[in-house]
Length: 165
Image (cartoon, rainbow, N blue to C red; front, side, top):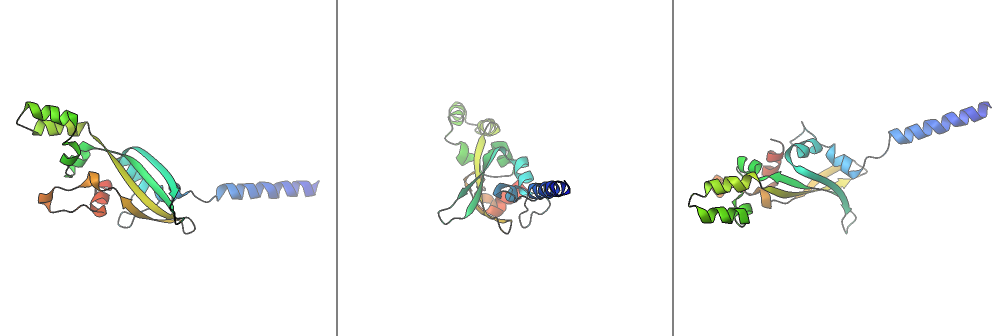
């Protein structure tokens, strides 16, 4: 009887140990991680605050690298407020073209379309599961172009400053 009780305790302890110390997923590593220079807020929290319709997924490259991809949308008004150049994103929209055809003052047209604009975003991180580490590898910079008069180039640094503002 004592042997059965001891065996039951060992099995239970083993299951508790495995359940409590599971390997985090690649997505968990990124979402709960910190980027260099932005150590006050996790990636997941910063992305949740900045983007809408967020979706996290994983895939393997042809070379076997584990990647985590975040896709979502950002409001055009938020990009405009941060002085990103949204005009290339709206200049061909039907709403903008209809409005611009009726007036010579384009500012109300830009504001109207911008307030309803949801711009797709895409970020990719490479993940080392053994080290529980990751690196930002790709940012689709198209939604994040800066106005040329500011003389600021498109860069991941500008995007991260926007995400962590």
